[in-house]
Image (tube, rainbow, N blue to C red; front, side, top):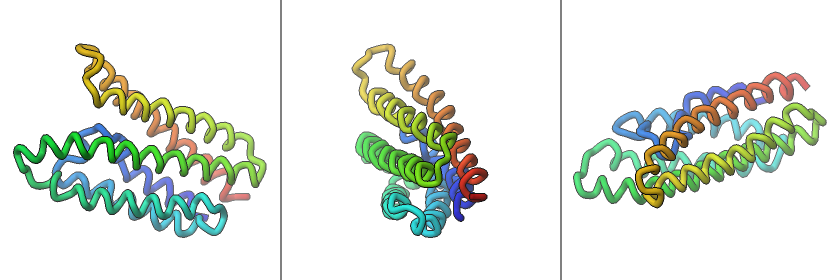
Length: 181
């Protein structure tokens, strides 16, 4: 059905952390590759739910944004690099929030259609985790908390790892529970 390809693409994407150093140098090509795999998965899944079609377009925008950011990440520009970091992080947060929200909403609506309460509960929980994670990510960008900003950034990174595995588990549940139905 496409959930196996989606889980593989999400696993290789690794770019879910908008404030992480994964986007440094040539490592930015890994999330671009993962986005391409996910784009192929959304092309397969778009016939089952309209939100997967929306996800196909969001994934395409995600790939284009990362490709546009690649020259700035690969080549070191000194003064432009610092300005680029402050501009790119909010853009990454916004696109990744939309990406995860619509992904989880698509899974939730598909689980409602096939009447699978376990996947529906997991996707609803992850939607709330999406709100929390990206709110903390936005707050960690600004030094409004003084010396505690570093703690907020650390918390954001640790919760981001937990969030990443929650989404992977949800995609695996879809692969096991929805594909067989």
